[in-house]
Amino acid sequence: MALINMIVAQAATQGAQDATVSTALSVWDLTLKGGWLMIPLALLLLVSIYIFFERLFATSRVTKADANFLQSIKNLIQNGKIDEAKQLCLATNTPYARMIEKGVSRIGRPMNDVLVAIENVGNMEVAKMEKGFNWLATTAAGAPMIGFLGTVTGMVQAFYALASAGQNSNVSILASGIYEALVTTVAGLVVGILALFAYNYLTSRVNKIMNRLEGNTMEFMDLLNEPVKPAQTAKQ
Image (cartoon, rainbow, N blue to C red; front, side, top):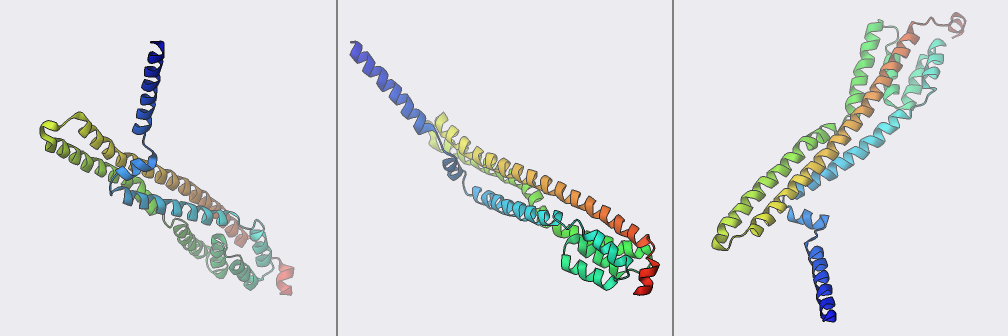
């Protein structure tokens, strides 16, 4: 009798384990059950990941500018070597160098004209650094909406299947349709949250770069207000 009870208990335990394994779903299984709306969500995620890393590397190159660049420009301008200063800017080829090159080319004009020219180039450089940001912002707002759309359409299909079952309808029919419909909501929220964090992080990096460019611009404007060395000017 004890042997029979042991066998029954083991069978019950094994059956419970099998039931747990069979009811468990992997992330891939849930993704497949999300329907065709998972395709645009996947595309939004892939493009957002590409934009994030591409912009991350691009802004990293900007932050690695030569610390001695401004001092070199200062020495060349004070020595009256304007053309060499322009060549140094062109050779450096960074957003800040392009801004300074525009300012150097305007030397001799009113200071306000020089500042406006530098600011215009700076605005264009910032626009280049923010390329793709609109996509991230749109994904952050649109992906959850696509997820909700999938949930609504899935709920409609679930209730239609329940009504079509007639007298054979049961809770399992409705429950299976509901959890499949909610998959798109989860996916949309995940994609939207990732895009939002990526957008805010990149925006903060660009803002820091803008503050640095503004500070360097003010240093350059102060440099133009410094008198040129008389002796070296005469020598040139």
